[in-house]
Amino acid sequence: MDRDQGYAAHAAGALQDPAHLSRACLLQGYEPVPTDRPFRYIALGRGQDSELSRAAAGHPHASFYAAACGAPGAGGDAAPRQAAPSNLTLLKTGLADLAPAMEGQPPFDFIVLRGDYDRLPPEGRRHVVDFIVRHLNPGGIVHVGYNALPGGSTGHPLQRLLLEYQAAHAEAAGGAAAAARRSVQALAGHGAAYFDSNPGMRALWEGLKDRSGDGLNRLEPLYFADVARAFAAAKLDFVGAATPPPAPALTAQQREFLDQAPDPVLRETLKDYLHNTAYRSDLFVRGARRMHPLRRRQWEERLGLTPADTHNNINRKVAHELE
Image 1 (spheres, rainbow, N blue to C red):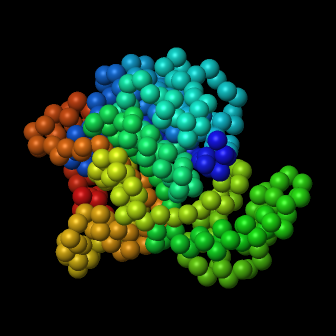
Image 2: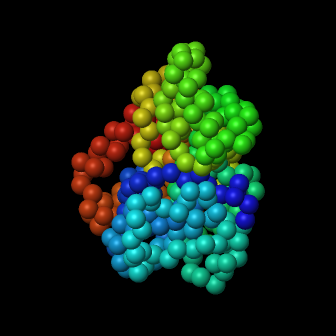
Image 3: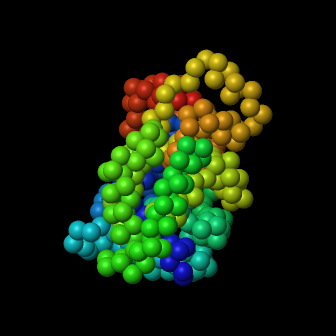
């Protein structure tokens, strides 16, 4: 597979732990995947790493898979490799071939993307959707993170600058990508108004500059509506954020405005404009089912959630409009 179809993956951490994903669905009011009985989990765009190994070791009754999918630098942790848990299978199949390669296998309960979805080219995104169509269980959970619009549009000039520097430093020792990052870092250190005057731009660069490989060139922020419609083709329903975003509370007037949106996809898109959202971490479920309050309470007890957990999450949902 062409390496440009791979992920520039970076740490997902505990956010993609299966227990966390199930709790997040529950706290949004949707039927979760039970993690106290056998389930199947696959991480796309990442090899073995400590977080995935820890999740597999913590759920010995489950089957975990990791598919690097040709991702640059997706071999896992830089630390010395430890033996993978016996229930973690490492796949070397490319993203384009992964769906047919897994034919005949039981479907998955969790499919997580261990890199930013927007960093895949359009063909790679279609392969992801195809894999979900063919290999996700009804009720299964998908987690996807991506640079989002409209807030993510501020990164386009930075992307162009990196590409120009790479073209100029094609023969640089240590690689063109590293030389481009050094040059942009020098620009940022010389009082460039682009960094000093744009709110959040210096923070964006600080978060990008140390990423390995050339993956940060493939920055293509996406609108939530486009992601939701692509995943709707796989019969996925958006259920909410994997974690509440660090956004300010909406005013009463803003909430009233959102309530007039004719459909949920437009409503979520409008929230991104109100918050100027630059990054999303979304949960989708195949055939999402709302729960009766009594069943929800039973699930909370099963997953070890306290009334305080539920109360605090409701408060966050009101504040951040995550319903």
